[in-house]
Length: 260
Image 1 (cartoon, rainbow, N blue to C red):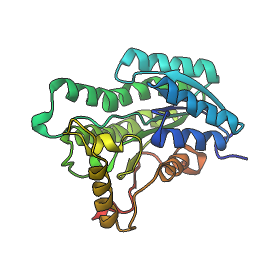
Image 2 (cartoon, rainbow, N blue to C red):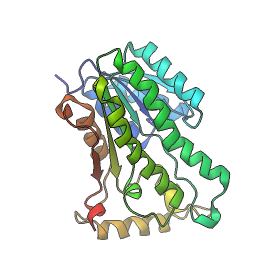
Image 3 (cartoon, rainbow, N blue to C red):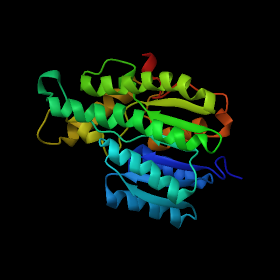
């Protein structure tokens, strides 16, 4: 028996990083997973990994910064899976860097990808979940949503917005037995790590990325960074019936960085 037997889930940004680890974990625990991503190649690779392990998955291509595509994503996923029990809005971008380097277009794209997509994705998902008797919605926020971000104020604002969204939708969706929670991962060396650490540069400097990772490891009380499986396991708990009384929770997965 898996923790998600009989459940159907959508995970955005599931082509890599936290989303891929989550999709594989959810499928291993019995869920049918709609792997949603803007990248066809990596999304299909996640689907293949799930199917090779005996799980069930479908790929849905989506640009979550476009609300018509977000609506289509939920509709196609429900048609392909048969129902919807879990929606994890995990897709994200590094966003622009310093304030003086932030264009209006970059600001709007960051907000649309994180907060706007989270709001409308959750709305469409919750409407589908009502037909199933309830469900779980999860947002990937960040340590940057809890503490000031030197690297990208706009990214921090967007991630803080997901925390506020979590609390507000908790109240809105509770009458339908739809739980809403958020994860706040700390720094992790995912596929997006180099983009995060080199925001204000035209080139990627691996040594800079490693130096920043080393700084966070030394600062973290546990002496390490979180990895994709740490986040996937936390998501599994929050989206499973083990957390049936947990809603409105903002859970840090950051090796203790949020308290130092």
